[in-house]
View 1 (cartoon, rainbow, N blue to C red):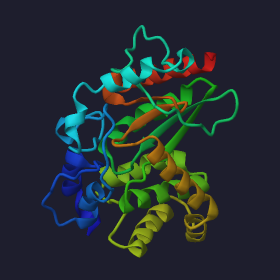
View 2 (cartoon, rainbow, N blue to C red; view 1 turned 135 degrees about the vertical axis):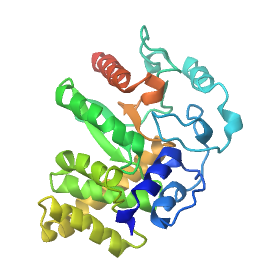
View 3 (cartoon, rainbow, N blue to C red; view 1 turned 45 degrees about the horizontal axis):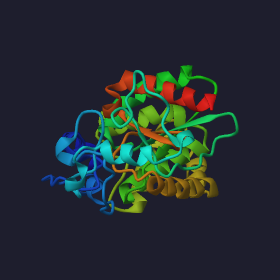
View 4 (tube, rainbow, N blue to C red; view 1 turned 90 degrees about the vertical axis):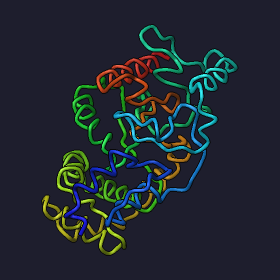
Length: 285
């Protein structure tokens, strides 16, 4: 049934694909509609707009505590001025703190080796704006500075997001996440196959069929699917979703200190330039 619903999927993704507060959609695709609704409600960080303000740059969270969202940069900047100098954002020039990027307070540890600057993208396969950003990130990844350690982390809001996260990490365990991630996005957004169903067995079958169609054996896929590495990565993704207080995707976190997205940066190309500049500032410190 899910394979035949590209129109319903497209409508949902354009409205509230990965918001934590759903926009009601009349649809006979419960597994798809559930993706927007299944995550627990929580307050939004000040810099994330309400669902009514969603732009083409980021899937937003919704309307929870919108009264606290006026002047989105002010609260972060007020906290920033109270930080010691070494903890403040790098000097702007082209970029304005509180407008193009904001501090993550408190800063979070990274998993990158010494000498590397970690750049994390929080994403969801079902997010139309993540799909739009993906080719830009692929091109940037091939040409990024050697000191940048680029890490993709799937958001972990609810069962549908977790099912897609398990698929991503299964592909990673098999060494296929880079070449097959674009195909997963295409499968969902171009072919209307959400790769998730209303029960775990059907979800596994859909994802296995996709893997087999792309040269992965059933035995290898199933072994990785429930393997130790995948389960460990899922736990890490769960922790980072909470630690970064993710309310909308795609979201970029630079070295556990700075948060930005396409809308804040001003566009896809601008986002890549901002990532490079913030990473370069971190590398100098």
